[in-house]
Length: 342
Picture 1 (tube, helix red, strand yellow):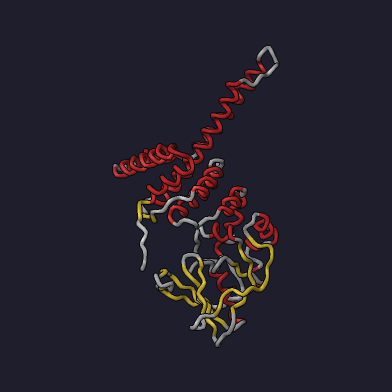
Picture 2 (picture 1 turned 60 degrees about the horizontal axis):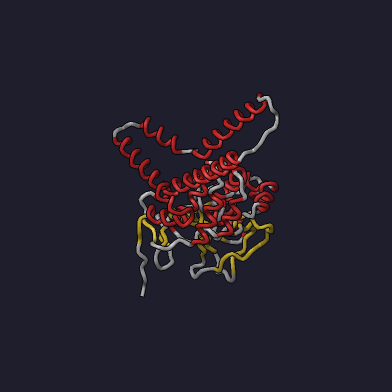
């Protein structure tokens, strides 16, 4: 007997997640987003684009505005103290209270920006009606409230939306990893993301060493960030299927590796393996296929009597199989260029 889980609007389930993490203030946070969204819709209908952009600009970077205001006020206070007759500076109870209030305002502004971003990601989607994991929401919002960079907030918003849509998508270990990453770290990690195949591996041999993401310093940095395993070796990746082929997930499509002979055992390729955190974060932003990279992979497969096809328009079926719109043969090409799309 197949059980079907009821589905609800993603925004309503996001409210449950937010309330589990920051309490009843989740209501006002999402009320502000909803009001802003409805207001922008009305303005767009009225073709008041300039005013709509103003509302959007005002809703972004709240935490950075709070920080800038605090910096300006701190400078004014310091200058006033220097100009005073008495040089003794006392930190009063009021100063401490202001500091606590500042931290609270900044953290809540960060949480609000991330929740708003998750709401935009979810839009009008329906999601399974499940109970949020209280340990996950506690950890997520404890970390997220300290994320002030708008670029990093967008990543945390995608993670929150992804968890609402598919519980268990992002582990607590990955939250710990992301917490310690800077904007520069995420930018460096985004470079190899277009090359992730299958269950989190990146094909790597002499033919791809000239690709930018595979410089030694970059790879070592990703190891330090706990995104890439420290060892590269020939690894058994998949068992051959009945049709002498293996299908690997790849970006928004899939790759089909077909043996020209009757293979036995497993397909082995030289590859870097991503960590669990690397796999989970690498899936946040699917990219267009890099055809030069795929041609290098095809060149390697040719050396072991295999051929490569890119499957476009892939749909996962209920029985675990896939359907696809078209199959694109990837011809071997030993020399590399700038990359592209099929």
